[in-house]
Every structure is written in C-alpha cells, then in structure tokens.
Amino acid sequence: MARLVRTCEVRSWVKVNALKVCLRRIPHILQNNMSDSSDSDLDEHLSDSSDEDSVDVDPWVTAVIYRARLDSDNPKPPLWRRPYYGQAVRQGTDEEIFNERKHEHEYDAANQDKDKELGFHAMLNQYDSRDIDWKILQSKSGPRSKMQAWANAEEKRLIAENGGPLRDMNRRLRQTLNQTEGGKGDSWWESRDALRRLKFCKFKERMDEYVYAYESSLVPHAYKDVDGFPLGVHLASFRKGRLWKGMPEQNELKEWAEALPKWAWKANKTEEYRAALSQRLKDRLANETPEVREQRVSKSKATWAAKTDEQKAISKRKIKATWAAKTDAENAERKRKQKATVDAKTDEEKADMQSKWKATMDAKTDEEKAEIKRKHLDAHRRPEVRAKISQMAKDHCAKRSAAELIRARKIAVPFVKSSKIRAQMRAESTDFSGRNETQLLYMVAEDGKTIRRVNNRGGMPTRDIVGPVVDPEPIVASDSD
Image 1 (tube, rainbow, N blue to C red):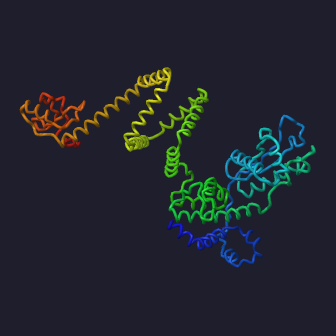
Image 2: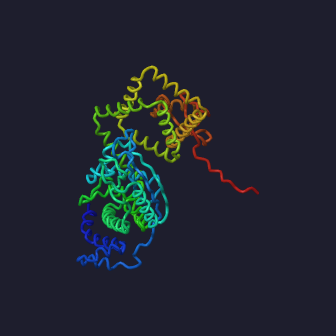
Image 3: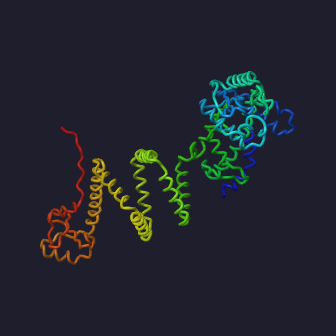
C-alpha cells in the first residue's frame, strides 16, 4: 500500500513525461491537423519532436478482400445474394485475418446500436448466421502502404461492378450492401496509428504505476486502478496485439513490454497464475456446501457418461499423453506435493479420506468391482509394469534398510560373547520397534565391523546383519600403469 501512495504522488509527473514521449511518435500529419490549437503546452511538446523521432517504417502486412452475402434456401428476400465487399489489412495469415474480421462484424452487429436498421450489419441481425456465405476473394502480402492502396482499389472496383452502394433494402435491385463506395482515406493509417499511440501512452502510464507498486507486470484480469481503469482487461488485449501489432514501431513496443519485471505473453503459463488458480480452487472447494458438491459430482459423472466410447478413448489418450510428457523432475515434484498434502492432514482427516474411499468402493456394483480388479490384474501382467513394481519394492527396501542402519548406529551396544546374556539383554530391551512390535536389540558383531540384530535366543546370524559400523571408503579409480 505504501507503494500505491507513492504512485499517486508521482502520477502527475508520469503523465507529463509519458505524454511527451508518446506525442513525439505521432506523424507530422497530426501536427498539421492540430496546428490551430491554442494549447501552448501541447504545441511545446509537439515542437520538441525532431526528424529522428519520426516513424518511416512500413510494416509488412497481408491484405484480404472478402465477400459476404445472404445465401439461404429461400430466394424471396430482396437482399438475397446481394454482396457485401470488405477489406482487412493486418499482420497474420489470410485465414486468421479473415476469421478475425468476420468475428468483428458479427460482434458489432450484435452489440452496436448504430447502423442496425440499415446495411450489412442490419442483415446480419435479421438472418441466421448459417445463412450467411463468407468467402475470401483475394489476398496479398507486402508493405502496408502498398497493400492498403491495392485493397482500396479492389474494394472500390468490386462495389462499382456489382451495382454500387446500397440504395434500398426493401427492393430487389442490382446493388451491394456497402453504404459507401469503398476504400479508406489517404490519412486513415496515419490517424489510426496516432490514436493507437495515444491509447498506448495511457496504458503504459498505468502499467508503469502498477509495476512500481507491485514490482510485477502480471496484472490480475479483474484488476482496476484507483481511477477505475481496467488495467487487467487492457493488458490481456495488449498481449493479443492491441496497440502494437502492425505499428511501425511494433518491435520497440514489444521490447518495452518484455523488459517489464515478470513479463509473460501467456500469463496462464506462469507459476504465479497456476498458484493463484490453485488457491481459488482450494478456496471454492473449502467453502462448498455438501449440496453444491453433490451437484458438481453428479454433473461431472453425467457429462462423462454422455460421452461416446470414442470420445472417452480420446480423453484418456490426452490424459495419458499429458502425464507421459512430464519430466522426472515434474513427477518428483508432484509426488512431493502430494505427500506433503497428506502429511499435513490430521489423523481425523486421514480417517475421513479412508472412510470416503471405502464408501465409494462399497457403493460400486459387483460388475464394477470385477472390472476394476480385471484392469488391475491386466496392468500387473505387463512386463514394464512388473519391472516398475519390482524396482519400487527394491527402492522401498533399500530406503527402509538405510533408515534402520542410521538408527542402529546410534543405539547399538558393544559385543557380548555369551548368548544367554544377549538373550536376557534383548528380553529387557524397551525398544519395541521390531516386526509385529517385538523387542529389538542391536549389537556390534565380534569382529567389530558390522551391526546385527539379536534374536530371542541370543543368536546373531548373518541374515540379521543391519550394515557396517562405518561406511567403507569409496573406491577411487586410478590410471593403470
């Protein structure tokens, strides 16, 4: 919070300097349009820009010319097969640009109030989307200025050759659904770039304040600053290309972002995101009522039961592939976390887990239990599974033996020659950590090299050797003569 207070104190300084930097990047056409302004401060900032600050890079883009029309089974509507011609000049493949522009048309038609009663968007609102035929007519890649000129010319030509702009939506005429003759103004890109720079200036200012306050650029999606600016939403849009993609200085803008602390183009791949997601899930499950949990489990079971055998097989293959792709380190970390989670539970929680598992198994039918047993046996018959289980057993025995040797070295008693006295010493031992909670006595062997267990008759056979009294010296490899 102290950082946020400091942030508010320096905000005015940040605004002036950020505005100064951003305005220096605006092309000279914007200066000419604003030359009559009476704002002396703005004129001063604009006058500071030099020839070195001007942007003359022409980004490489792809221009797409597309057509959309009503192509329903019913040919009676007056707008049936009347075309709309559009253009999109952006970075990306022709299919990506086309699909993105198509989505924008559909979104604008559904959410914007203007033009809903006239033109192409009005038709989109009036008819089912399945009745609209979309098609890429041409595409071409090159410098942005040349591609925009080509796209303008093609759009104008297609509109003129197919009847010109829309004149009447209620009569069957030779016309298009375009409301203009097509093309964009000569200064369209310059004005658009200038507007994007001003918006980037505001976004950069808020990002700098957040980074200063939290020393991280991982802004939560729902975060809003003290002025209500939805920084998290704007950051998500920036990651997708808003404000930088296709700009002459896009490399500089990307470098600025990548220099921020903890920057990530895909926030959902970061450890911070996964930790926050895990915590939200834990909080939701912890506050979940029994009724809500029952509904969730029932819904999950119903969803799985509704899948076809092929869909279930695909899901299982994906899960198996995901686990197979994990490294040994990731698997070890997962097991460590699982063990830590179980170890942190109380005895009551562990007993509750066991009772729930038992109740789940008891609720299964005889056929389900038989199927589980069959799958278990089939898995154990595979050579790789048998080898893995054997190695796990060996590792477990080795780990247990190592732990026993460490303990035995601490409490082993000196060698006693009489077997009767050794038996008596074992009977008087207070160590009941042997198998089946029997008494246990560790004793150094007569040769003083090994530690052995003493049996109830006072014997110390070789099969009861725990290990050496002292670990042997490591063998050092030497060069042969």
